[in-house]
Image 1 (cartoon, rainbow, N blue to C red):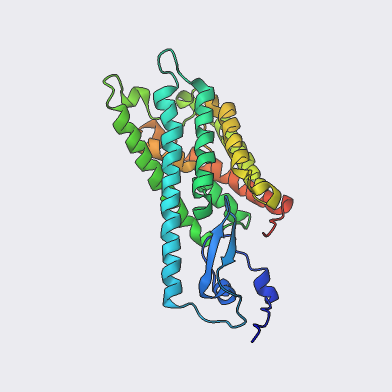
Image 2 (cartoon, rainbow, N blue to C red; image 1 turned 90 degrees about the vertical axis):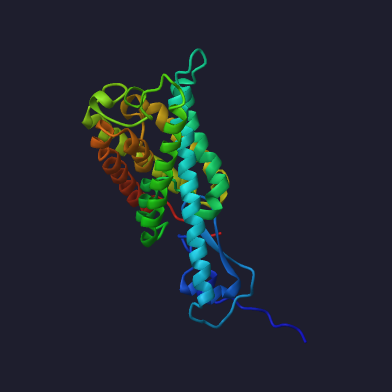
Length: 302
């Protein structure tokens, strides 16, 4: 007997989540075989290994377990990715920026930060969206690309990853008899005397707000359209490289509250006292970009 064709209900055909775990409607549409297949930063789509069903059903205990497993995977991915960003970016600044005779300098440190994002975007983008940055998470939530309810979990993972990476850097740097934490630091951010170029508070706040806003605009724009999503990690990584080239002399470049918090927690002193700037300015820039992103871009569904 021939199997009748399966008609996809209109509501299900357009069912797309911008977060990373299934809603009740998605499970109802996709059945037990439904899974979420995130694609790059802040964007995810629903895939199914089962046929679409006309019937709805409440979430089962098994569905809840799947959701919890997805949450655990995303948390781990964000922790791992942020660890890599701080280890690679700040590590390049601590160990290699001025290494005798072959130091990589400002250009090398800028490229290191960009490469951490590119590599992790391809590695964990399908798992968590590869935010690695509380400002990115907030900006995507404001732009309607990420569930607000999930933001605290992501931010917690990012902070823990950054602090663990900073601890690893301190452990490695301490193996050098000439290293002094107060003198050499861990690539912390700051203004005034703590700014690499001696820039004041107003310049640092303006720079961090603008750089973060442009970073989020590039992220949202690059992930909005199907034809550009495959190359989005490259655009985003290059954007972060450019941002560092511009702003390292001004603030040592944050645009990422987690990246600033990890080293500051271990260095203490002025780094902790000035840390608020590197939360307030990037978050404000991210909110502005999220609002602008709603106006400029239309998220194309795969």
